[in-house]
Amino acid sequence: MTFTDRAWERTAAVRAAIEASPFLAELGAGTLDAAVFRHYLEQDAIYLSGYARALSLLAARAPDTAAATFWAQSAHGAVVVESALHADLLESGLLPPAPAAPVASPTTLGYVSHLVASAATDPYAVAAAAVLPCFWVYADAGRRLAAHAELVPGHPYARWVAAYDAPEFHASVERARALVDAAATAGLEEAMHEAFAVATRYEWLFWETAHRRETWPVP
Image: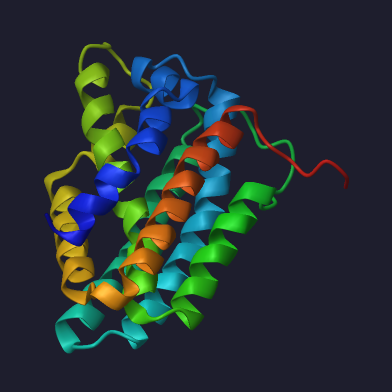
């Protein structure tokens, strides 16, 4: 087994919680409250900006040109492609208006801060393991949700689901996995597993807190 095979296996309990997420269940069924989806998109737009910074830092520390190019292109995709999708959905007129300018929730801020700090200060291999769940968990969820969304005529979130089940997105997951596996060493493996597990828990928490529209407990 490769490192990423083992990391996926070791996070099985967290991924089971993700599969049971009410947010994803309702999203797949097309019944997710539109105000909840708006909140999620707003938080994800903030997250993607931070994620792109983490990927850019990782690109600067990559061991070779091919790895640097992939992480840099992924940072560009997070900012231009995914953020544009979110902006289009937010401005589509299908969602309720924003009650106020979005502010990063505690979970969003924590996840972004974790990834940027890892990309800036951890060994390259550990930082690469930390950014991988955002690729892989989304692709896994997208594939499962697409099977449900196809059965719902006029699914309101079909465009979002399709974006994360697209062949090119799955291809990027495989490339990211290959780079993480290439960087893995025995001396860093446990630190890499911890980085992967923490990010996977944040992926679960991000959807859980979006479902209840998490805000700061005090202004």
